[in-house]
Image 1 (tube, rainbow, N blue to C red):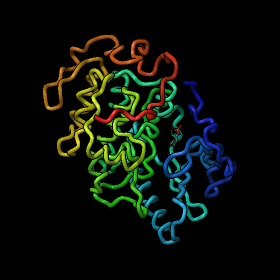
Image 2 (cartoon, helix red, strand yellow; image 1 turned 90 degrees about the horizontal axis):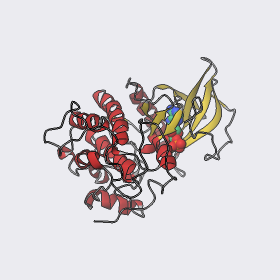
Image 3 (cartoon, helix red, strand yellow; image 1 turned 180 degrees about the horizontal axis):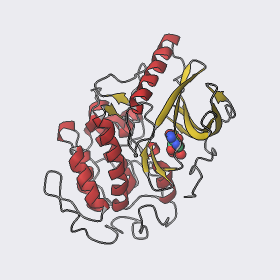
Image 4 (spheres, helix red, strand yellow; image 1 turned 135 degrees about the vertical axis):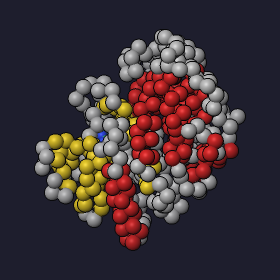
Length: 345
Ligand code: 3AM
């Protein structure tokens, strides 16, 4: 990673330059698009009042909405940005402002200079279980802080996890976060969130809870070590069916992380690994130790194994050792982490 740059956010993959140099709300000058999320484009921008760079998310509504529906969507997004602003944690992107321009909200956030986990996986291929556990531990700490404030993220996925150049792992994009207990923003026929990360209870149309975010964390960590997303199928509908019905494809490269994945990816949210236990297990695996199946005793960090964990455990695994959590990039870029659907069990 190159210090000081915004990671892969050169704008090369984001073609919409049309708003460049536009000033939002008389204050935020859009400089370059740095990524595109589900709800719109994220820009690197300059806050002209405080003379610092920020990230600004442009919210785009699905085409064809009635004006009243549009208005409702925008007001809800504002409320949800305010909900996210309640969370104060070093692992959670700081929301500074909701600016209003051309009748729609623009979410102003801390600019994280680094790469998204999606970019890292694309460039480097699957992670070692130890490194994934280290990332997962930090994402979980951020989620627990959000949950303690009554905020659900609802869109945990590699594109929304930012790995800053200083090594900090930051959970970003609270654009569709919501207060626990309030209903989701839904457009006719639309599910909020990406199908492959959606927890079974959400795929079944039930209200999400903190455990739904833990499921998404499990999917993300599975994809990070295995190189394939566990339930992804050719169409969103088939993916949702697999989320609800399919057994978890047995991990082949997860090694010490396997009990954590199994615990986070239990279909019944009541049986899912509790956050505190998941945090403890991730800490142990991140330190090079091993853990027993969820519910069982955990081997403490006092007796971690040393050295890489389960390197060479699966195909292409032997040359991917990383001596530091964000160290050496090795080997040819592998297949996309979300490329090939896993075989159905
Ligand atoms: O499209 P990629 O994965 O490169 O990292 C986020 C993602 O990048 C980036 O915008 C894209 C869509 O979410 N992003 C989101 N919030 C950000 C922030 N606060 C951010 N990059 C820097 N700072």
